[in-house]
Length: 559
Image (cartoon, rainbow, N blue to C red; front, side, top):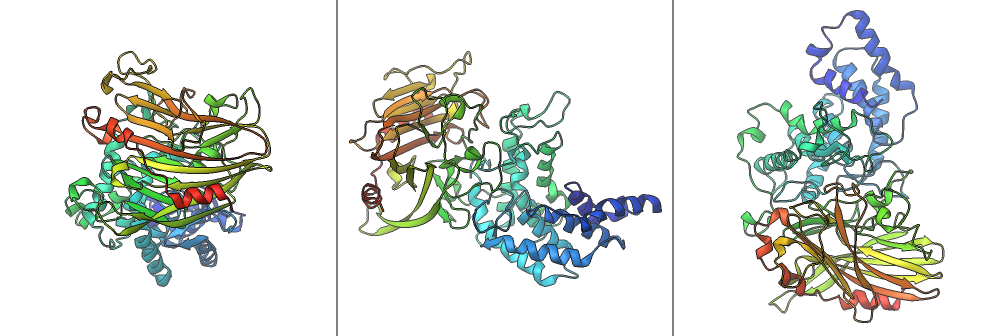
């Protein structure tokens, strides 16, 4: 089924090279193979597009094996996946939200754009609808790429497809869709090329025989899904759809332009903080850090490491995300950008957020620095139940001021009917030094940042990594008794760095208690800032964000 999609697409655009040379017997073999999908039961997901393209390939070459009724029925059903603004669920259910890269570059938006290019002769209205939705989606999707490095924010499953995350932009050019303002072909060209340049620095994505391996920036089977095969990484080739675009197309004739949020522009062409209602994300570019806050997504079927791939509070273009390596102790569960709980004193089995009962994007007023005016800041509120007698309500808050550009805030209200250990992590960061590859050690206050190290207090934990930057967490409420700790997650748990350290906050909770946490999460990505060690990261760490009183009052009072 899977292979039928690229085969059908190839036959549709290059039949003279791949269909015409076949003998009649060979053509019948192809017809019998991919045409047999028309009477088969298909997964009720993006896979339905595979059958559409099998039929398009046969139709383009005059084969009688194609089925127009099946094409129309499939695309009409696939349209029910649309939730608004160009965003599609990976399936028809209203009871879950799963909008990862399959909504855009890996499948749905990409295949809608290819359909718009190939089906105009018999389905012109739908083709125009797909172009319109692509323009809507583009204004959201551009926020998922780091303006400086070009790396896409890792989120969701199938990330072994690597630079396929930017395939939407290649398909945008292939379908010749006019970019919506303020986007230009020069900007789109830059989105594609910067991402490929970012990937070009990682030589360990290749096996010794030259083939791509399963993993991300290095071979990693903890990341893999059970449907991965040796050929899976080659879905990255979707990124090269733009090579089918004629050389006179403005994608090629335009000069490469920086991302709309690149500092080079002076003033941003698009908002630096944007709340997206459909995927339940808040996209943030602040303090040279590109990341998203997330609540409400989940995979609608059992998936390896689903808590890590969909349930974390934050996902970063600079630090990636971490997956569990086993089921014994916190170091294997890795509570990176997560609040983990354990109801056993020995701390063996931990629960991280997987299923969210509700997720809502709110707006709270904040004061604008140097002005009497106020602005509205999006806040993502959600609740979950790790056990039936434990309820956790969480508010995720973007940076509240320019002075605190490197901070975001998480407020949690934990109501528990059982004794619990709790541990909350910030961003996992490269945890080894550049000299001998050993773990970073506690850092003396007078030591320069270039040496790297860790700092722990009664209410905070901080990791200064010589190459990767700074990652820290801090309890913002004086009434809390949380303790800072830096843990050593298992090797190969993180997508980007094989050995990381994770700043965390810990507290035990008594049965029948209601506890409110206010976590300040601090991050400076080293890859985007030259000489950041000599800069004012210490001053930035010292500028503590103010917890919005409106949210804090709601957390204390409950609902």
